[in-house]
Image 1 (cartoon, rainbow, N blue to C red):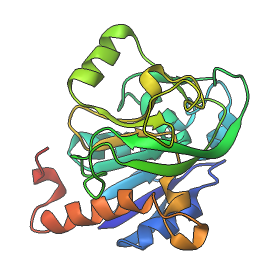
Image 2 (tube, one colour):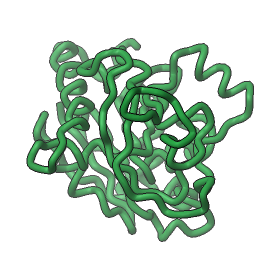
Image 3 (tube, one colour):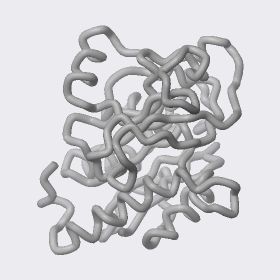
Image 4 (cartoon, rainbow, N blue to C red):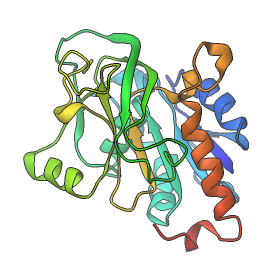
Length: 240
C-alpha cells in the first residue's frame, strides 16, 4: 500500500499521518499546488489541521487547490481516499462526501479522547475491526458537528454509510458521549462507492502503542489487508 499525504498551508497532522501510514506501507508527501498524482499511489490522505487558516469556512479554500481536482478524479476512478478532521471538511466541500461540518454545538474547541463504535466493519478502512467494536481515538476540532438534511441522513443510514459513531465506554450512543452535536452521533462516513472515508477523530494519533493507545492502527491495518487482497489489480479495476 502506497500512500500520498496532501500538505496544505496550515496542515498540522501531515507528519502524524505519514508516520502512521508508513507502518503499513510506504508514504510520500503531495503538495497542494501539484497538478498530478504520482503513479502507484493507492490511497490519498487529507490530514487534519487548519488549511488556509480556516478562512471563509473550514476546507472551503483548500477545496480549490490544484491537487484537489486530481484527488476528485482519483476518487471517482475508485482510488482510496481518507479525510481526517480538516480533511473530512475538505471532502464535504469538494462534493466527495455529503453533508457539512458545522461549529460544535457547545461552541468550544474540543480536544480529548472519545470512544467510537465501529458501525460498519466491512469497508476497506475498517475490516481489521469487528462490528460494533468500541475503540478510543482523540478528537481536536471546533467544527466537527456533522449535519445533513433528513433525506441524506436516511440514505446514509439505509446504505450503511455511517462507519463510526461517538459512544460511551459501554458502547451506548448518548448525548454526553457526543463531543460536537453530530446528528445520530456520526463520527465518520463513507461515500456510496465505499472508497472515500471522512472522519473527525484522529486514528493516526493513536496508531502506535508508544502513544498510550493503538486503537487507530486498525484503519491502516485494514488498508494494508485491502491492498494485499487486491495486489494483482489496478486501482481503476477495483470494484466496491
